[in-house]
Image (cartoon, rainbow, N blue to C red; front, top):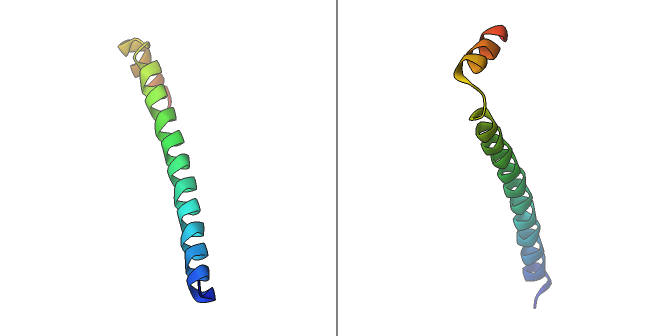
Length: 56
């Protein structure tokens, strides 16, 4: 395999690794957001309203 072809494959592999790292990051953030929404289901509407109003 020519050296330039090897370099292209290495460059593509590095880009794939970075893309995977970004996907892992965003999947983690989305999972945290989903968990937070599930936890909010356990909060009464009045308690939630009071908490949101106090943050204004």
